[in-house]
Image (cartoon, rainbow, N blue to C red):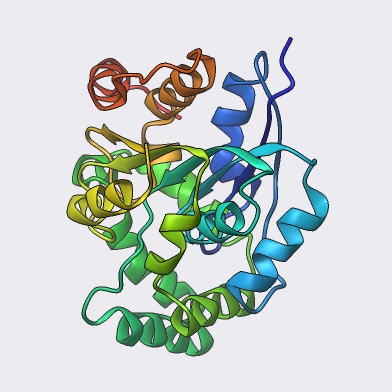
Length: 253
């Protein structure tokens, strides 16, 4: 039995489906919940919501926008966040980022289906697009979130995208998990993020794009289990992540 509790935070437009495999796979060692931050207008408001509803001490795992929020949470409440999992997320602003966020938000307003389809073409490892069943499920899941909610989340990102100033304040036991073939956030950015947090490690998941928790769910859950189960020592996270991904890459969600 463990006292570990994990708050999972999805990215833009994501909901409970994003973290379903991890919740099920880790249920024997941790309780968990998914917090969908779809009503707040800023990163600060999102972090405040999580801190108001989470247990006194907890771990947090965030994907993309969720990782952006998780950094704020860990920096604001270092005494409350024990472990931090940052997935397919960033700290610096790349050239053209704000223009892209603004364009995506405007596209959602005038043609939600078209905007989601255009963005979908950037999300996955190229081999995943051959799995028509997986793609159909993922497209359907994305449409569970109202377009105006996605617009609000994108505008929150555009308002305060960079998180570099938060990193020195993060003291949680941190693992950065990143899809090796992520075309939205680069591996270079994942390495920079890892280097900015004292004691953080990086796990690269092979044959995964920007949706690692659902593209390579077995590998992702296995790496989280390794990190949660180790007794304080530094785990060879990157090597283990790659070896697990090799055996899991062909399995369906």
